[in-house]
Amino acid sequence: MKHKELFKLLDEVQEDKTAPKLKIHDRVLLIDGLNLFFRNFAMLNMVNPDGVHIGGLGGFLRSLGALIRQIQPTSVYVVFDGAGSTTNRKNLLPEYKSGRNLQRITNWEIFENLDDEHDSKVDQIVRLIQYLKMLPVKTVAFDKVEADDVIAVLAKKLESKYNSNVFIVSSDKDFIQIVTDKTIVYRPMEKEYYTRMTVKEKFGVIAENFILYKTLLGDNSDKIPGVKGLGEKGIFKKFPELQLTVLSLDDIISISTRKFKDHVVYSRIVQDQERLRNSYKIMDLHNPMIDEKEIEYLNHLVKDDLPELNSKFFINLYEEDKLGGMIRNLEYWLRDNFSELKLYSE
Image (cartoon, rainbow, N blue to C red):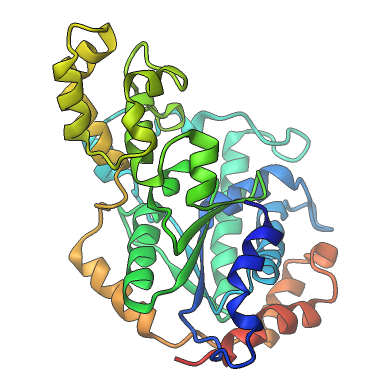
């Protein structure tokens, strides 16, 4: 669903002059921090006057402002993967996300080797967090926890307790499984909002079954294998129920057991059911891999006031890094995008 169509629906209630003033939890923006950073790092091969790459840092900040103007949230969270974030899933599948650090250099004109590029990424991410601390934005990262899990917990909490409209910004398809009437995924590369309707149109399944769809087909980007011989077209011939009926993995295995002799795909599912259960567990954001301690922290974070906008120190950082024209009219940009976030009440 495109921007104008979606917000026409969401804003109908606000056209009523008697509608209550928006509160802090009404429209929440959850950003997959590294996902957005790496997208900008790869796309914007920009350097400052000292020859230092600033594409990831400056591009992220520019994207953040654009997202706030576009979605007009009442609160914003930026969530990063913690150190060793893939540990829990690698314990289940050692190949999980393997090879992702062996990618080619983004721009040979700027970086001499992979180590040089890696150092630039780390430096920019560390600096980005310093910038975010100057804004009325909540920033989150836990060691050994992926951003996916944190965002899933926050989305569920905000929707169930505060009836929030939640917008998740990420190109990661895993989030599609938690799309509901109140939780929407925005994929920046496509410039499209994934509602329940969009999920059905794009993939042919209801949102509740998207995790089954991915479990059966696999996920090449995360090195999670699917069922051999089963593709995007064939999956609905074998399991038409995915299109309309909420199913569990046990349902898929039960159907396959009954039809064991009808097609080799069914027999493979039955024979590989333990591997499929493992894959399902790795991808399941309805049961995120996060400890109660971190969940309790998030519960408190949601209740906390937004941090203050510190324009002076933000501008100091910006000038130190010589970001120049990355953001036009910086003082206006800060005021226009962030000052209103502090006005929303509990």
